[in-house]
Image (cartoon, rainbow, N blue to C red; front, side):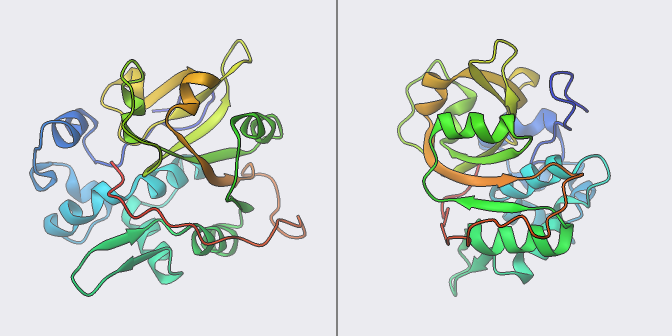
Length: 226
């Protein structure tokens, strides 16, 4: 599905959009997702183990457009660059921003810049410049009427200002309804969930060579990203 507001695809990190709510809020095992193979995972078990960590890859997949590789093909590329690691006990760590940005630049020919310190006002400037932004937020952003217990740990893709120009329009890989998968928030409401860091991506038709992006900084997001 393509968003009518920003013309960017709306995708979820779980293969069946209708199961996002039951999985992330109801404790349903992702392995029961009947569409798991559409993600590109090699097995049902691999899908169940990884899908809750792939909000960043879902954001990248949306930014790449309708011809983007599968979710797990993007994950495999990110792993090769060190954007995800697995501890000896099997704990998945990531997304690690600097190698992720390198992966995006070298494999997908898309300029990617890490922003270790990023304000909401700076986000508006990036959006005005034609960039999209993977922003670190608390997963509770899908319920903005509630007070979040923290900030960060989940990634959403900011694609534009709101129609009135004062807020942000974003796509949430773990949105549980159509209205939370492509949503608008005022800046004050967004700031309640935002951790002040992220990665910005150039538009698809903008060359990555010679753009002088600052050296990427390693920033880890270690929580399961749902």
